[in-house]
Length: 356
Image (tube, rainbow, N blue to C red; front, side, top):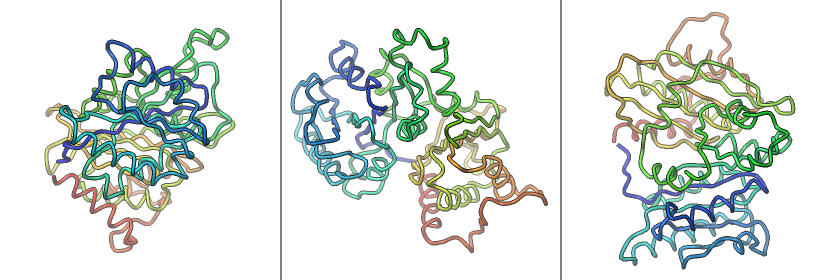
């Protein structure tokens, strides 16, 4: 099973003006907010760190990356900053419990996840926590690619500026979130800090949400080719077969899979497994203690851009469940003997994560 002795890194994202800094300030100054055991990293786009001027600094635990956008130009700065925080944590009487990164408003979270999951200097000290997206209730963000990517990647969303959204139909922001990202939790702004803290370790939140979803295919908006698929089907009879299928799917189409989440039952180990990823970054699978209830169905959520969700479902049924469908057109030929080395290595890593 995956170890949790490392420090969780949580990401606060959201488009320009969505209220990220206000949320972070409240979490830093509220009596129920973050304590001194939480390090804050503020990312700015540009040479002048404007957001940093508005952050309520407490001590050396508030750091800023200000030479560029964290998603593209300063990955080395991210690595060095987190390495610095690890050393700082080691020197403290009370080690750090978590790190929260506030991204710039135009950052795509996916490269950050890739850095956290692939840099050997970070893997032994940190693990990815949760991604929270601030969503402006007064702006649907449908025309902005970055805003769509941020919302698709989120584990949870906080809808901001509700007091200013008088002209918006009641519940329209929540509907927009669920249409694009049905697996995301919607949390009130005053629970940001407590929700983040609850995600330091695995919990049942994602499982509860996924288990309650109904099968559907939904389009985000007329201006985008983004669609979400909720697939409720039998769990795979073989975890390795599922791992091979998912790895090959991500390798072939990862750039068009904005987000995937899954809850499935592993018969061989008599346990539930949670899988999730953003584009080509797959988290290590997590064991969930959900009991031996009668439910054994898998719940899989895919958020895709320019990819037919029906092909994903057909591919799963054909290659994972081995269902016979002579009319099905496979999304990709998925055969262990035909896999390229990169996707084979990905599948082996997933299997290793389950075996722990």
